[in-house]
Image: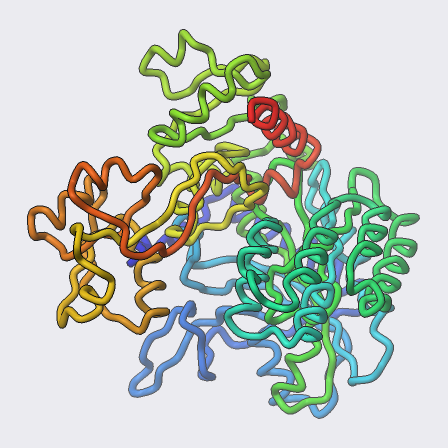
Length: 322
Length: 215
């Protein structure tokens, strides 16, 4: 049984002021681009995952808001017959930590782009990437790296091979570890093993700029993934000319984090020397249909708590505040 | 900021195999420091040092980014729920994770026990095997010298790593089933690898090259 020490850090003067300043700057950035703020209640009464902080309100089991995307989805489907196309949020979420050093209370700022099902989504994906590209500069990070991925690069071959459940989870876990030898171990004896092992090798062969997409040609699923490859290629061509100084754009074909949730393009922001990603998001087109609404959506979340930790432990990664 | 890159090397069985393999390579450990009680050892490459850690602690140092790379047995990784990249199967340190009992006791004998007791350092792998086999058992968690448990009546059998079988033989035990296999793996901190590939990948390549040259 893992030991989890509850970790509820307080923010003192400098960090508290930085949090307030960063929230203001980022929400101003979203507002300037047409994203309107929603603030879902801190207390949720819907079914909650194990990792949420739960307690009784009288006889009712409730949870503190554990995820903005889920809380917003509840709010949007309850309140709007047609969704607002651009929304933003800021505040805290409360989750039991996976790693013992992570705090329970985490500050986040983020945005979502929501459309009726069937509308072209490529422009919305590029718009979100552009929004995220501006954020390192707004926060004063000296340099940053934006990883573009696509959950479909793994999801679609697994579905095409009829791989679900534990076996699919084992393949995804192996890819998450970037361990092609583990993919082979997991699929030992399965008829799709040679194809999926070759696909894993292709996904893990590069982690770099636009040339990375060429690695997909070696995959047995290259034909199946042609649309995804074109989408990533178009996104790179749209984003590279407007890349801010000190931001690097990389393609990460083996990004499988959140594969159960994401359905298409994914975005992850890193800073050289930071041990955790500073922002993450992507397309999650199955969320709203699962709640009975024919909408598609994508978004990203900036993890302000991690940025606050980084500013305290690695101030050399930030410009001096003006 | 030019920080020293740290690689976490295992103490014990894997470390005993690894250190001679690195001799004469750019990652050879300083022999004088090795003789001391120091746990941070310079290598032959300036700016790269090694941490000598117990296998069970090593993944935490890497996951937290203290060490950028590490070498650890896959048995240890499989027992821990920890977020790491596993860049290569290094091949050395190969051994079996086996169910071992007194000479003459078969797997069917163990299956037939109404209350089977298994002593092990590997509860997660043991539970997974029991589940696959449709068996239940009382697990007796141990951290060392599991071979003593059947001899002294603490358990009916053990689940432990077997390399040559010499230790088992010395205690009158034999393998009755192989649950899995283990070998040394090159692991990396996710954050360091994804955010600073220009620093970490050349180091991983240097380590792989050093081990390949000695293979």
